[in-house]
Amino acid sequence: MALTIKGQGDYLKYPDYDLVVTKFYSKYSIKDIPPTAHIKFQKRPTGWHIAVIDYSGEQKTIKDELFWENEKGKFKKIDFDKLKNTDENQKEIDKYKNEWSKRYYRICPYYGYPGWDWDVIQEFENTPNLPDSIVYALGRAYSSYASNLLNNNSGLADDKNRFKLPNGKNAMSGQQLEKYRHYRHRAIKKFNQVAELNPKYETIVGAIQVKASNEYLTSFLDMRMYQNEEQANKEIIKGLYPEFYIAAAKNYLSSCSPNAILFTNGDNDTYPLLYVQSKYGFRTDVLVVNMSLLNTDRYINSLRETIIDAPGLPLSFTPEEIAGRKRELILIDKEGNEPMDLTELISFVKNDEHVKTYGKTDYFYVPSNKFSLQEQENVMAWEVNKRYFLRNHLMVLDIMASNKWERPVYFAITMGIDSYFGLTKYFQLEGLAYQLVSTEQEETNDQTGFVSTSIMYNNLMNRFDWSGVKTITSHGKLLCMNYRNNFHRLADALTKENKLDSAKAVLDKCIEIMPNEIVYYDFFMIPIIEDYYSMNEFEKGNNIALKLLHNLKNDIDNYFDITIITRSNHKEAALQRLKKLAIQYDQDELIKEIEK
Image (cartoon, rainbow, N blue to C red; front, top):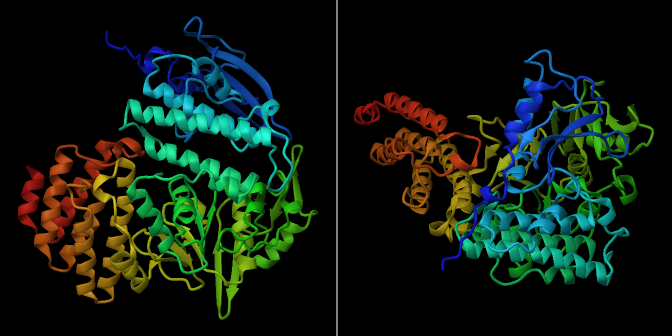
Protein backbone atom coordinates (compact mmCIF):
# COMPACT_ATOMS: atom_id res chain seq x y z
CA MET A 1 0.00 0.00 0.00
CA ALA A 2 1.44 3.38 -1.03
CA LEU A 3 2.21 5.94 1.68
CA THR A 4 0.00 8.99 1.42
CA ILE A 5 1.67 12.29 2.33
CA LYS A 6 -0.66 15.24 2.73
CA GLY A 7 0.18 18.63 1.23
CA GLN A 8 0.57 21.81 3.23
CA GLY A 9 -2.93 22.86 2.22
CA ASP A 10 -4.33 19.90 4.16
CA TYR A 11 -2.92 21.41 7.36
CA LEU A 12 -3.22 25.15 6.73
CA LYS A 13 -6.73 26.35 5.95
CA TYR A 14 -5.98 29.93 6.97
CA PRO A 15 -6.63 32.84 4.57
CA ASP A 16 -3.47 34.28 3.03
CA TYR A 17 -1.52 37.07 4.70
CA ASP A 18 -2.26 39.58 1.90
CA LEU A 19 -5.99 38.93 2.15
CA VAL A 20 -5.99 39.46 5.93
CA VAL A 21 -3.98 42.69 5.65
CA THR A 22 -6.19 44.05 2.87
CA LYS A 23 -9.45 43.09 4.59
CA PHE A 24 -8.41 44.71 7.89
CA TYR A 25 -7.14 47.97 6.44
CA SER A 26 -10.09 48.20 4.02
CA LYS A 27 -12.58 48.14 6.90
CA TYR A 28 -10.98 49.64 10.00
CA SER A 29 -9.30 52.91 10.96
CA ILE A 30 -6.08 53.10 12.98
CA LYS A 31 -6.12 56.86 13.61
CA ASP A 32 -6.63 56.43 17.35
CA ILE A 33 -3.66 54.13 17.82
CA PRO A 34 -0.90 55.84 19.87
CA PRO A 35 2.10 57.05 17.81
CA THR A 36 4.38 54.74 19.80
CA ALA A 37 2.28 51.67 18.89
CA HIS A 38 2.10 49.46 15.79
CA ILE A 39 -0.32 46.95 14.32
CA LYS A 40 0.95 43.35 14.33
CA PHE A 41 -0.69 40.51 12.44
CA GLN A 42 -0.50 37.26 14.38
CA LYS A 43 -1.22 33.84 12.93
CA ARG A 44 -2.17 31.79 16.00
CA PRO A 45 -3.76 28.35 16.55
CA THR A 46 -7.08 30.12 17.23
CA GLY A 47 -6.85 32.09 13.98
CA TRP A 48 -5.61 35.45 12.70
CA HIS A 49 -5.28 38.05 15.45
CA ILE A 50 -4.85 41.82 15.14
CA ALA A 51 -2.67 43.08 17.97
CA VAL A 52 -1.64 46.61 18.89
CA ILE A 53 1.84 46.62 20.41
CA ASP A 54 3.14 49.68 22.28
CA TYR A 55 6.91 50.03 21.93
CA SER A 56 7.43 52.96 24.30
CA GLY A 57 9.45 51.56 27.17
CA GLU A 58 8.92 47.83 27.57
CA GLN A 59 7.05 46.20 24.68
CA LYS A 60 3.41 45.78 25.69
CA THR A 61 0.25 44.46 23.98
CA ILE A 62 -2.52 47.03 24.48
CA LYS A 63 -5.12 45.43 22.20
CA ASP A 64 -5.68 41.89 20.90
CA GLU A 65 -8.60 41.00 18.62
CA LEU A 66 -9.41 37.66 16.97
CA PHE A 67 -10.05 38.73 13.36
CA TRP A 68 -10.41 35.37 11.57
CA GLU A 69 -11.56 32.43 13.65
CA ASN A 70 -10.01 29.06 12.85
CA GLU A 71 -12.81 27.02 14.42
CA LYS A 72 -15.54 28.64 12.30
CA GLY A 73 -13.37 29.45 9.31
CA LYS A 74 -14.61 33.01 8.91
CA PHE A 75 -13.82 36.65 9.72
CA LYS A 76 -15.31 38.35 12.79
CA LYS A 77 -16.28 41.90 13.65
CA ILE A 78 -13.62 43.45 15.86
CA ASP A 79 -13.33 46.41 18.20
CA PHE A 80 -11.73 48.98 15.89
CA ASP A 81 -13.31 52.15 14.51
CA LYS A 82 -14.87 51.71 11.09
CA LEU A 83 -13.03 53.25 8.15
CA LYS A 84 -14.75 56.31 6.63
CA ASN A 85 -12.30 57.18 3.86
CA THR A 86 -11.40 54.17 1.72
CA ASP A 87 -8.05 55.70 0.71
CA GLU A 88 -6.98 56.38 4.29
CA ASN A 89 -5.05 53.13 4.77
CA GLN A 90 -3.67 52.52 1.28
CA LYS A 91 -0.10 53.30 2.42
CA GLU A 92 -0.48 50.81 5.27
CA ILE A 93 -1.73 48.11 2.90
CA ASP A 94 1.22 48.69 0.58
CA LYS A 95 3.69 48.76 3.50
CA TYR A 96 2.53 45.49 5.03
CA LYS A 97 2.25 43.72 1.68
CA ASN A 98 5.86 44.59 0.89
CA GLU A 99 7.27 43.59 4.27
CA TRP A 100 10.02 40.97 4.14
CA SER A 101 8.39 39.05 7.00
CA LYS A 102 5.25 38.23 5.00
CA ARG A 103 6.94 35.11 3.60
CA TYR A 104 7.34 33.72 7.12
CA TYR A 105 3.57 33.82 7.60
CA ARG A 106 3.26 31.66 4.50
CA ILE A 107 6.03 29.26 5.48
CA CYS A 108 5.00 28.69 9.09
CA PRO A 109 1.67 27.30 10.32
CA TYR A 110 1.75 29.96 13.07
CA TYR A 111 3.82 33.12 13.21
CA GLY A 112 4.11 36.72 14.40
CA TYR A 113 3.86 36.47 18.21
CA PRO A 114 6.03 35.35 21.13
CA GLY A 115 5.80 31.57 21.44
CA TRP A 116 4.79 30.84 17.84
CA ASP A 117 7.71 28.44 17.53
CA TRP A 118 6.66 26.38 20.53
CA ASP A 119 3.07 26.20 19.25
CA VAL A 120 4.35 24.76 15.94
CA ILE A 121 6.57 22.27 17.77
CA GLN A 122 3.76 21.14 20.08
CA GLU A 123 1.30 20.61 17.25
CA PHE A 124 3.50 18.93 14.64
CA GLU A 125 6.41 17.34 16.52
CA ASN A 126 4.79 13.90 16.72
CA THR A 127 2.66 14.06 13.56
CA PRO A 128 3.59 11.32 11.04
CA ASN A 129 3.86 11.64 7.27
CA LEU A 130 4.20 15.39 7.17
CA PRO A 131 4.80 17.05 3.77
CA ASP A 132 8.17 18.65 3.11
CA SER A 133 6.75 22.17 3.64
CA ILE A 134 5.53 21.39 7.16
CA VAL A 135 8.74 19.55 8.06
CA TYR A 136 10.62 22.65 6.93
CA ALA A 137 8.34 24.87 9.03
CA LEU A 138 8.99 22.60 12.00
CA GLY A 139 12.72 22.98 11.41
CA ARG A 140 12.33 26.76 11.42
CA ALA A 141 10.38 26.53 14.67
CA TYR A 142 13.15 24.49 16.35
CA SER A 143 15.72 26.97 15.05
CA SER A 144 13.75 29.94 16.35
CA TYR A 145 13.23 28.30 19.74
CA ALA A 146 16.97 27.60 20.10
CA SER A 147 17.86 31.20 19.24
CA ASN A 148 15.20 32.58 21.55
CA LEU A 149 16.66 30.66 24.46
CA LEU A 150 19.66 33.00 24.22
CA ASN A 151 18.21 36.36 23.23
CA ASN A 152 15.24 38.26 21.88
CA ASN A 153 16.87 39.45 18.68
CA SER A 154 13.83 38.23 16.77
CA GLY A 155 11.48 40.31 18.90
CA LEU A 156 9.30 37.19 19.24
CA ALA A 157 11.02 35.35 22.11
CA ASP A 158 8.96 34.12 25.04
CA ASP A 159 10.53 35.74 28.11
CA LYS A 160 9.66 32.89 30.45
CA ASN A 161 11.73 30.42 28.40
CA ARG A 162 14.80 32.57 27.83
CA PHE A 163 18.02 31.77 29.71
CA LYS A 164 19.25 34.31 32.25
CA LEU A 165 22.83 34.67 31.06
CA PRO A 166 25.73 36.78 32.32
CA ASN A 167 27.71 39.01 29.99
CA GLY A 168 30.79 37.65 28.27
CA LYS A 169 31.76 34.20 27.09
CA ASN A 170 31.26 30.82 28.78
CA ALA A 171 27.86 32.19 29.78
CA MET A 172 25.81 28.97 29.52
CA SER A 173 25.83 26.26 32.15
CA GLY A 174 26.31 22.66 31.04
CA GLN A 175 22.56 22.07 31.27
CA GLN A 176 21.74 25.20 29.27
CA LEU A 177 24.30 24.29 26.63
CA GLU A 178 22.78 20.83 26.29
CA LYS A 179 19.26 22.25 25.95
CA TYR A 180 20.34 24.81 23.35
CA ARG A 181 22.15 22.19 21.28
CA HIS A 182 19.18 19.81 21.53
CA TYR A 183 16.84 22.25 19.82
CA ARG A 184 19.41 23.59 17.37
CA HIS A 185 20.24 20.10 16.19
CA ARG A 186 16.57 19.17 16.03
CA ALA A 187 16.30 21.99 13.48
CA ILE A 188 19.21 20.56 11.51
CA LYS A 189 17.62 17.10 11.63
CA LYS A 190 14.37 18.46 10.20
CA PHE A 191 16.15 20.33 7.40
CA ASN A 192 18.02 17.15 6.51
CA GLN A 193 14.70 15.29 6.55
CA VAL A 194 13.31 17.81 4.04
CA ALA A 195 16.36 17.16 1.84
CA GLU A 196 15.55 13.44 1.91
CA LEU A 197 11.88 14.06 1.05
CA ASN A 198 12.67 16.60 -1.67
CA PRO A 199 16.34 17.22 -2.59
CA LYS A 200 15.28 20.13 -4.83
CA TYR A 201 13.42 21.96 -2.04
CA GLU A 202 14.24 25.69 -2.17
CA THR A 203 14.28 27.98 0.88
CA ILE A 204 14.70 31.72 1.29
CA VAL A 205 18.49 31.34 1.42
CA GLY A 206 18.81 28.66 -1.26
CA ALA A 207 18.62 24.89 -1.55
CA ILE A 208 17.62 23.01 1.60
CA GLN A 209 21.17 21.64 1.91
CA VAL A 210 22.45 25.22 2.22
CA LYS A 211 19.85 25.98 4.88
CA ALA A 212 21.01 22.96 6.91
CA SER A 213 24.64 24.10 6.57
CA ASN A 214 23.68 27.61 7.68
CA GLU A 215 22.04 26.13 10.75
CA TYR A 216 25.34 24.57 11.81
CA LEU A 217 26.99 27.97 11.35
CA THR A 218 24.25 29.69 13.35
CA SER A 219 25.17 27.35 16.19
CA PHE A 220 28.86 28.03 15.53
CA LEU A 221 28.38 31.78 15.83
CA ASP A 222 26.22 31.44 18.95
CA MET A 223 28.93 29.31 20.54
CA ARG A 224 31.55 31.89 19.58
CA MET A 225 29.48 34.64 21.21
CA TYR A 226 28.13 32.86 24.27
CA GLN A 227 30.70 30.15 25.00
CA ASN A 228 34.12 29.86 23.35
CA GLU A 229 35.97 28.94 20.16
CA GLU A 230 36.39 25.31 21.23
CA GLN A 231 32.64 24.79 21.56
CA ALA A 232 32.05 26.73 18.34
CA ASN A 233 34.40 24.51 16.35
CA LYS A 234 32.37 21.43 17.28
CA GLU A 235 29.78 22.68 14.78
CA ILE A 236 32.31 22.87 11.92
CA ILE A 237 31.78 19.41 10.51
CA LYS A 238 33.00 18.00 7.20
CA GLY A 239 30.94 18.45 4.04
CA LEU A 240 28.99 21.61 4.76
CA TYR A 241 28.03 23.74 1.72
CA PRO A 242 28.08 22.82 -1.97
CA GLU A 243 31.27 23.45 -3.95
CA PHE A 244 29.92 26.68 -5.48
CA TYR A 245 29.31 28.24 -2.06
CA ILE A 246 32.77 27.26 -0.84
CA ALA A 247 34.31 28.89 -3.92
CA ALA A 248 32.16 32.00 -3.54
CA ALA A 249 33.16 32.33 0.12
CA LYS A 250 36.81 32.21 -0.87
CA ASN A 251 36.15 34.83 -3.54
CA TYR A 252 34.59 37.21 -1.02
CA LEU A 253 37.65 36.84 1.21
CA SER A 254 40.08 37.01 -1.72
CA SER A 255 38.55 40.36 -2.66
CA CYS A 256 40.06 41.86 0.49
CA SER A 257 43.55 43.14 1.22
CA PRO A 258 45.47 41.57 4.15
CA ASN A 259 44.09 42.16 7.68
CA ALA A 260 40.87 43.65 6.33
CA ILE A 261 37.55 44.23 8.06
CA LEU A 262 34.77 42.91 5.78
CA PHE A 263 31.16 43.93 6.42
CA THR A 264 28.53 41.46 5.23
CA ASN A 265 24.79 41.32 5.82
CA GLY A 266 23.02 38.09 4.89
CA ASP A 267 23.36 34.41 5.72
CA ASN A 268 25.04 33.41 2.46
CA ASP A 269 27.65 36.17 2.44
CA THR A 270 28.52 35.48 6.10
CA TYR A 271 28.22 31.83 7.14
CA PRO A 272 30.17 30.19 4.28
CA LEU A 273 32.98 32.71 4.87
CA LEU A 274 33.19 31.76 8.54
CA TYR A 275 33.15 28.09 7.51
CA VAL A 276 36.09 28.29 5.09
CA GLN A 277 38.06 30.29 7.63
CA SER A 278 37.47 27.81 10.47
CA LYS A 279 37.45 24.57 8.46
CA TYR A 280 40.16 25.26 5.90
CA GLY A 281 42.12 28.09 7.51
CA PHE A 282 41.47 30.25 4.43
CA ARG A 283 42.13 33.99 4.79
CA THR A 284 41.82 33.97 8.56
CA ASP A 285 43.37 37.45 8.60
CA VAL A 286 40.05 38.94 7.46
CA LEU A 287 37.57 39.88 10.19
CA VAL A 288 34.05 39.12 8.89
CA VAL A 289 31.48 41.42 10.52
CA ASN A 290 27.76 40.85 9.95
CA MET A 291 25.87 44.16 9.83
CA SER A 292 22.56 42.68 10.99
CA LEU A 293 24.14 41.20 14.11
CA LEU A 294 26.14 44.38 14.72
CA ASN A 295 23.01 45.81 16.32
CA THR A 296 23.44 43.49 19.32
CA ASP A 297 25.81 44.25 22.17
CA ARG A 298 26.95 40.67 22.73
CA TYR A 299 27.95 40.24 19.08
CA ILE A 300 29.86 43.52 19.14
CA ASN A 301 31.67 42.54 22.32
CA SER A 302 32.56 39.12 20.89
CA LEU A 303 34.50 40.88 18.11
CA ARG A 304 36.68 43.00 20.37
CA GLU A 305 39.41 40.36 20.71
CA THR A 306 41.48 38.54 18.09
CA ILE A 307 39.52 35.85 16.20
CA ILE A 308 41.86 33.19 14.79
CA ASP A 309 44.37 35.53 13.07
CA ALA A 310 42.21 38.64 12.66
CA PRO A 311 42.68 41.45 15.19
CA GLY A 312 39.50 42.52 16.98
CA LEU A 313 37.35 45.49 16.02
CA PRO A 314 38.88 48.92 16.63
CA LEU A 315 36.15 50.45 18.82
CA SER A 316 36.06 53.35 21.25
CA PHE A 317 32.62 52.52 22.69
CA THR A 318 32.92 50.46 25.86
CA PRO A 319 30.62 47.49 26.59
CA GLU A 320 28.85 49.61 29.20
CA GLU A 321 28.09 52.37 26.68
CA ILE A 322 26.21 49.97 24.37
CA ALA A 323 24.76 47.61 27.00
CA GLY A 324 21.25 46.32 26.35
CA ARG A 325 19.26 48.83 24.31
CA LYS A 326 21.51 51.79 25.12
CA ARG A 327 22.38 53.70 21.93
CA GLU A 328 20.33 51.21 19.95
CA LEU A 329 18.82 54.00 17.85
CA ILE A 330 20.41 57.38 17.12
CA LEU A 331 18.25 60.28 15.98
CA ILE A 332 19.53 62.70 13.34
CA ASP A 333 18.75 66.33 14.19
CA LYS A 334 19.72 68.48 11.21
CA GLU A 335 20.89 71.50 13.18
CA GLY A 336 24.23 72.06 11.47
CA ASN A 337 25.04 72.69 7.81
CA GLU A 338 28.71 71.78 8.04
CA PRO A 339 29.93 68.16 8.02
CA MET A 340 30.60 66.81 11.50
CA ASP A 341 33.97 65.11 11.99
CA LEU A 342 33.49 61.47 13.03
CA THR A 343 35.72 61.84 16.08
CA GLU A 344 33.54 64.74 17.28
CA LEU A 345 30.39 62.80 16.41
CA ILE A 346 31.45 59.80 18.49
CA SER A 347 32.33 62.06 21.43
CA PHE A 348 28.93 63.74 21.09
CA VAL A 349 27.03 60.44 21.15
CA LYS A 350 29.09 59.22 24.11
CA ASN A 351 27.79 62.13 26.20
CA ASP A 352 24.85 60.80 28.21
CA GLU A 353 23.27 64.27 28.27
CA HIS A 354 22.83 64.39 24.50
CA VAL A 355 19.36 62.83 24.36
CA LYS A 356 15.92 63.82 23.14
CA THR A 357 12.77 62.50 24.77
CA TYR A 358 9.83 61.12 22.80
CA GLY A 359 6.99 59.63 24.77
CA LYS A 360 8.58 57.75 27.63
CA THR A 361 11.85 57.05 25.84
CA ASP A 362 15.14 58.97 25.66
CA TYR A 363 17.06 58.69 22.39
CA PHE A 364 20.65 59.68 21.75
CA TYR A 365 21.06 61.97 18.77
CA VAL A 366 23.59 63.68 16.49
CA PRO A 367 23.21 67.34 15.49
CA SER A 368 23.92 66.83 11.77
CA ASN A 369 23.24 64.45 8.91
CA LYS A 370 26.56 65.41 7.29
CA PHE A 371 29.76 63.64 8.27
CA SER A 372 33.46 63.90 7.48
CA LEU A 373 36.68 61.95 8.03
CA GLN A 374 40.22 62.92 7.13
CA GLU A 375 43.06 60.80 5.79
CA GLN A 376 46.25 62.80 5.39
CA GLU A 377 45.46 65.30 2.59
CA ASN A 378 42.06 63.83 1.73
CA VAL A 379 38.81 64.70 3.49
CA MET A 380 35.81 62.46 3.04
CA ALA A 381 32.46 64.23 3.28
CA TRP A 382 29.04 62.65 2.85
CA GLU A 383 25.49 62.97 4.09
CA VAL A 384 22.70 60.63 5.12
CA ASN A 385 19.10 61.51 4.30
CA LYS A 386 17.48 59.68 7.17
CA ARG A 387 15.77 60.67 10.40
CA TYR A 388 17.72 58.12 12.44
CA PHE A 389 20.21 55.29 12.22
CA LEU A 390 20.73 52.13 14.23
CA ARG A 391 23.55 50.91 16.42
CA ASN A 392 25.18 48.92 13.62
CA HIS A 393 25.91 52.08 11.65
CA LEU A 394 27.04 53.83 14.81
CA MET A 395 29.58 51.02 15.16
CA VAL A 396 30.65 51.45 11.52
CA LEU A 397 31.25 55.16 12.14
CA ASP A 398 33.18 54.35 15.32
CA ILE A 399 35.31 51.79 13.48
CA MET A 400 36.05 54.32 10.73
CA ALA A 401 37.10 56.94 13.29
CA SER A 402 39.04 54.58 15.58
CA ASN A 403 40.73 52.62 12.80
CA LYS A 404 42.53 55.72 11.49
CA TRP A 405 42.91 54.00 8.09
CA GLU A 406 45.29 51.40 9.54
CA ARG A 407 43.27 48.37 8.36
CA PRO A 408 41.46 48.23 5.02
CA VAL A 409 37.67 48.29 5.35
CA TYR A 410 35.41 46.50 2.84
CA PHE A 411 31.67 46.11 2.24
CA ALA A 412 30.27 43.05 0.42
CA ILE A 413 28.62 43.91 -2.90
CA THR A 414 25.56 41.81 -1.97
CA MET A 415 24.43 44.17 0.79
CA GLY A 416 21.43 46.48 0.28
CA ILE A 417 22.13 50.11 -0.59
CA ASP A 418 20.88 51.29 2.83
CA SER A 419 23.65 49.28 4.49
CA TYR A 420 26.24 51.46 2.75
CA PHE A 421 25.08 54.52 4.72
CA GLY A 422 25.74 57.08 1.99
CA LEU A 423 29.40 56.11 1.57
CA THR A 424 29.22 54.72 -1.97
CA LYS A 425 31.09 57.59 -3.66
CA TYR A 426 34.11 56.37 -1.67
CA PHE A 427 33.69 52.72 -2.68
CA GLN A 428 36.34 51.09 -4.86
CA LEU A 429 35.12 47.86 -6.48
CA GLU A 430 37.76 45.13 -6.32
CA GLY A 431 35.77 41.90 -6.69
CA LEU A 432 32.91 40.76 -4.47
CA ALA A 433 33.59 43.68 -2.14
CA TYR A 434 34.06 47.43 -2.19
CA GLN A 435 37.04 48.90 -0.39
CA LEU A 436 36.37 52.15 1.48
CA VAL A 437 38.87 54.74 0.22
CA SER A 438 39.33 58.42 1.02
CA THR A 439 39.34 59.69 -2.58
CA GLU A 440 35.99 60.43 -4.19
CA GLN A 441 35.40 59.36 -7.78
CA GLU A 442 32.34 59.66 -9.94
CA GLU A 443 29.89 56.77 -9.95
CA THR A 444 28.64 55.90 -13.44
CA ASN A 445 25.61 54.24 -15.02
CA ASP A 446 23.73 54.02 -11.73
CA GLN A 447 26.31 51.54 -10.45
CA THR A 448 27.75 51.59 -6.95
CA GLY A 449 31.33 52.80 -6.52
CA PHE A 450 34.13 52.89 -9.08
CA VAL A 451 36.33 50.13 -10.48
CA SER A 452 39.98 49.51 -9.63
CA THR A 453 40.86 47.88 -12.95
CA SER A 454 44.24 46.48 -11.93
CA ILE A 455 43.07 44.86 -8.69
CA MET A 456 39.79 43.64 -10.08
CA TYR A 457 41.36 42.22 -13.23
CA ASN A 458 43.78 40.15 -11.16
CA ASN A 459 40.97 38.94 -8.90
CA LEU A 460 38.50 37.93 -11.62
CA MET A 461 41.00 36.59 -14.12
CA ASN A 462 43.61 34.96 -11.87
CA ARG A 463 42.64 34.62 -8.22
CA PHE A 464 38.93 33.77 -8.06
CA ASP A 465 37.75 30.18 -7.73
CA TRP A 466 35.07 29.24 -10.27
CA SER A 467 34.38 25.75 -8.93
CA GLY A 468 30.84 24.45 -8.75
CA VAL A 469 29.28 26.80 -11.30
CA LYS A 470 28.01 23.86 -13.38
CA THR A 471 25.90 22.50 -10.52
CA ILE A 472 24.39 25.69 -9.03
CA THR A 473 20.75 26.11 -8.02
CA SER A 474 18.57 29.19 -8.52
CA HIS A 475 20.02 31.14 -5.58
CA GLY A 476 23.52 30.46 -6.83
CA LYS A 477 22.43 31.92 -10.16
CA LEU A 478 21.56 35.13 -8.36
CA LEU A 479 25.19 35.46 -7.30
CA CYS A 480 26.21 34.69 -10.89
CA MET A 481 24.31 37.81 -11.93
CA ASN A 482 26.59 39.76 -9.62
CA TYR A 483 29.58 38.04 -11.18
CA ARG A 484 28.36 38.92 -14.68
CA ASN A 485 27.78 42.53 -13.67
CA ASN A 486 31.32 42.67 -12.29
CA PHE A 487 32.76 41.32 -15.54
CA HIS A 488 30.77 43.98 -17.42
CA ARG A 489 31.89 46.78 -15.12
CA LEU A 490 35.53 45.73 -15.41
CA ALA A 491 35.34 45.46 -19.21
CA ASP A 492 33.63 48.85 -19.42
CA ALA A 493 36.28 50.48 -17.22
CA LEU A 494 39.11 48.86 -19.21
CA THR A 495 37.55 50.08 -22.46
CA LYS A 496 37.50 53.63 -21.12
CA GLU A 497 41.20 53.22 -20.31
CA ASN A 498 41.71 52.09 -23.93
CA LYS A 499 42.79 48.60 -22.83
CA LEU A 500 40.65 46.81 -25.40
CA ASP A 501 42.52 43.50 -25.45
CA SER A 502 42.09 43.16 -21.68
CA ALA A 503 38.44 44.16 -21.93
CA LYS A 504 37.78 41.48 -24.57
CA ALA A 505 39.58 38.88 -22.46
CA VAL A 506 37.36 39.78 -19.49
CA LEU A 507 34.15 39.40 -21.51
CA ASP A 508 35.31 36.13 -23.06
CA LYS A 509 36.13 34.78 -19.60
CA CYS A 510 32.63 35.66 -18.40
CA ILE A 511 31.02 33.76 -21.28
CA GLU A 512 33.36 30.81 -20.81
CA ILE A 513 32.57 30.46 -17.09
CA MET A 514 28.82 31.18 -17.22
CA PRO A 515 27.44 30.25 -20.66
CA ASN A 516 23.72 30.22 -21.38
CA GLU A 517 23.62 26.45 -20.89
CA ILE A 518 24.56 26.87 -17.21
CA VAL A 519 23.19 30.29 -16.24
CA TYR A 520 20.47 31.47 -18.63
CA TYR A 521 21.13 34.71 -20.45
CA ASP A 522 18.78 37.34 -19.06
CA PHE A 523 18.26 41.10 -18.76
CA PHE A 524 21.65 41.51 -17.10
CA MET A 525 23.45 40.23 -20.21
CA ILE A 526 22.42 43.29 -22.22
CA PRO A 527 25.32 45.44 -20.92
CA ILE A 528 27.72 42.66 -21.96
CA ILE A 529 26.17 42.64 -25.45
CA GLU A 530 26.71 46.39 -25.59
CA ASP A 531 30.32 45.96 -24.42
CA TYR A 532 30.97 43.62 -27.35
CA TYR A 533 29.21 45.98 -29.77
CA SER A 534 31.28 48.94 -28.56
CA MET A 535 34.44 47.00 -29.48
CA ASN A 536 33.03 46.02 -32.91
CA GLU A 537 32.70 42.39 -31.77
CA PHE A 538 29.25 42.14 -33.34
CA GLU A 539 29.30 38.39 -33.92
CA LYS A 540 29.96 37.68 -30.25
CA GLY A 541 27.38 40.25 -29.16
CA ASN A 542 24.70 38.90 -31.49
CA ASN A 543 25.38 35.31 -30.46
CA ILE A 544 24.45 36.33 -26.89
CA ALA A 545 21.55 38.51 -28.06
CA LEU A 546 19.89 35.71 -30.04
CA LYS A 547 20.12 33.29 -27.11
CA LEU A 548 18.76 35.97 -24.80
CA LEU A 549 15.90 36.62 -27.23
CA HIS A 550 15.06 32.90 -27.28
CA ASN A 551 15.00 32.82 -23.48
CA LEU A 552 12.75 35.87 -23.27
CA LYS A 553 10.25 34.60 -25.85
CA ASN A 554 10.11 31.19 -24.17
CA ASP A 555 9.93 32.52 -20.59
CA ILE A 556 13.23 30.90 -19.62
CA ASP A 557 14.53 32.78 -16.63
CA ASN A 558 16.84 32.51 -13.62
CA TYR A 559 15.25 34.56 -10.94
CA PHE A 560 11.75 35.97 -11.50
CA ASP A 561 10.15 33.63 -8.97
CA ILE A 562 12.46 34.50 -6.09
CA THR A 563 12.71 38.28 -6.45
CA ILE A 564 10.26 41.16 -6.56
CA ILE A 565 10.61 41.42 -10.37
CA THR A 566 7.72 39.75 -12.19
CA ARG A 567 8.35 37.75 -15.33
CA SER A 568 6.17 40.01 -17.51
CA ASN A 569 7.86 43.23 -16.35
CA HIS A 570 11.30 41.70 -16.79
CA LYS A 571 10.50 40.38 -20.25
CA GLU A 572 9.03 43.65 -21.53
CA ALA A 573 11.92 45.76 -20.18
CA ALA A 574 14.52 43.38 -21.63
CA LEU A 575 12.92 43.30 -25.08
CA GLN A 576 12.64 47.09 -25.20
CA ARG A 577 16.25 47.62 -24.19
CA LEU A 578 17.55 44.92 -26.53
CA LYS A 579 15.70 46.48 -29.48
CA LYS A 580 16.99 49.95 -28.60
CA LEU A 581 20.53 48.59 -28.52
CA ALA A 582 20.10 46.79 -31.86
CA ILE A 583 18.83 50.01 -33.46
CA GLN A 584 21.70 52.04 -31.98
CA TYR A 585 24.31 49.70 -33.49
CA ASP A 586 22.45 49.03 -36.78
CA GLN A 587 21.94 45.32 -36.14
CA ASP A 588 19.14 44.87 -38.68
CA GLU A 589 18.96 41.06 -38.53
CA LEU A 590 18.56 41.17 -34.77
CA ILE A 591 15.81 43.78 -35.07
CA LYS A 592 13.91 41.47 -37.44
CA GLU A 593 14.22 38.59 -34.96
CA ILE A 594 12.96 40.78 -32.11
CA GLU A 595 9.95 41.92 -34.14
CA LYS A 596 8.90 38.42 -35.23
